[in-house]
Image 1 (cartoon, rainbow, N blue to C red):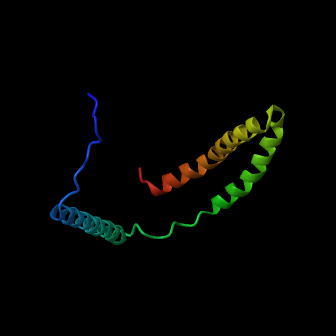
Image 2: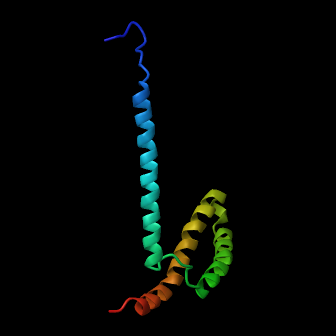
Image 3: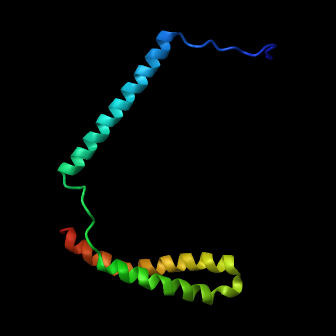
Amino acid sequence: MKLKAPFGVKTPRKTVSVLLILIWILSLITFLIAFSTYVLQLYQAHMIQAAPTNPITRVIIVSAVPTFAIITYATRKNGLKHALGSTLARTAATLMIFELPFDLSSWAERIPA
């Protein structure tokens, strides 16, 4: 079925427009109330606070830079694109393997058996 003329849409009446705007305002107010309620609950449960200091993070960040450079240098013969992709994957795996014993020991302290 093909239309011969463009299909026209009537503009809503003033009461419909006002009703849509009121519903929109009401939904924004509801969202703000719900958001403030969640924030209040997080505050009361003491979940909004600074993260504890982690001395291992500095060691990991400092060791990531030379690891990245060494792996990039070692894989440079296959091209820069391959070297960088390989370096990202291998550096991430290296840091995860290094981090695993520290994570396991901290989990043992934090989570009782």
